[in-house]
Length: 119
Length: 468
Image (tube, rainbow over all chains, first blue to last red; front, side, top):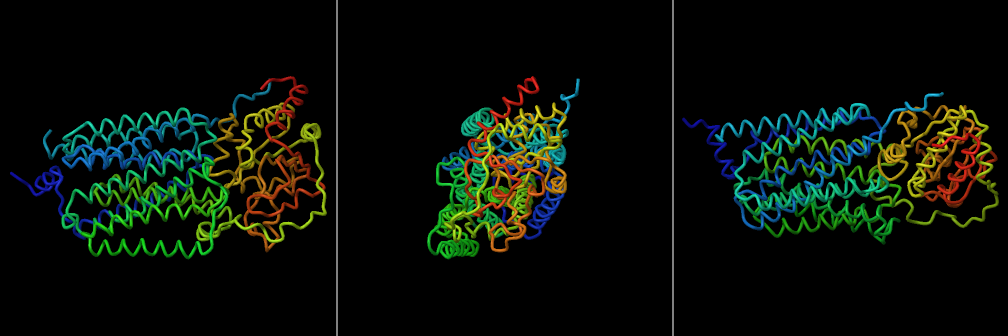
């Protein structure tokens, strides 16, 4: 039994592409726009004292472009693509690994007032 | 693994990652929950990477392992060894890396697939990704260079610069549109990519140091948009979501920063503030400011009941945050109320002062935003301004001709006494004289802020006898 889903999945697995139809692009645009609104709401509530860690964190999160880079570096493609992919993987890993580490390093420093209890 | 199963697993991991990313950012609403939130986001990232590697056919691991190995090593070294004061540079650099990844993924997609297979919609996203990515790469590298002082921090301008930039920008957009019309035109693709790189350089070149908070936030937003476009180009929903979150976060911060300066984006990008010497700069100053010594400063501080400290970029340059905190602790021991007032655009990026003070162990509940503390200045005995100028310049309230006019400032002039720690009597970045320097209530303590504060701390230490 071969359902359309499996055929589509197989096509993608083989790294073949079919042009997007407008019926397919619109759900993606919905995701884009709604995530933007969600982001605006969530970011608006971020404590202003944490705005620098916020920048580091969103940077690390958008390092998720790593997933695209991994496919370019290891997929069934030309040497050129592998090298482009490798550089992209390097750049994205710097952001992911470095971004999360430095965010944590900063967040560890933020402490509440406690120790100065008067004798 | 069965193909459909691995697809279900990959999509599930992406969904989980998207949820965990949002939860992670939500955690940042409070310092208490922030670290836990980031841990959730890290789990999300790990899931997405594993899901991808299981689902897509990987024929060679060599390049992946090299990239991940080199990238993780560089990232770790930077995270561990980079001093906190270098944080603005590090953030600028990471925007460049993020955008570079987007550009390279775009190029790979374009060379591997015939334009007909990509289809016009994907081509549109792909072109956008490459164009915005290119602009962000060089723009961020310029910002990095300026912050690291590899290139001149002052605005660089030339005659007709704005017209030249607009022309170049239109040419880039024009080629991009042509590329959408004819996706087989490789020359158009590579040309607008090259122009994108040039636009990034030219866009940031005329922007000076004090406008960096806006520029860094805008570049953050662009890097996010480029990532979201990558998601559209390679049909990856979690990339669309993460890019969109990053993009709106940067956009939100840029709005916040430009509001805090009462300037529009256009004004920041094309205004080149601080470029021209201020009109009538060489007017002979007839007023005299009174210079005081660290001893005077110590005397005034220890006789106060309430003190507010206003840090600025000068504190970061002088690395004075640690000794400042030491003084604050001595004052607290003398039962003096000490707080910090943080202006949103103090420093070189959003939250710059907060991070530096956190590094010096200043508890975050002593830090107050402008709106939370501005009414309290009138009941405050002493305000200590460390290396800030424009954000406390009263000209912003009343002098219509000033470039600062309309900018919401910290009302330090309403306090009983104002102590300015500055290197010189010079004007701030905006080139506007600060009349407050010549006010009777003002004490100017000129010199290196760290040196001055160390002397004051030494004297206070003798008085309290405590070690901090």
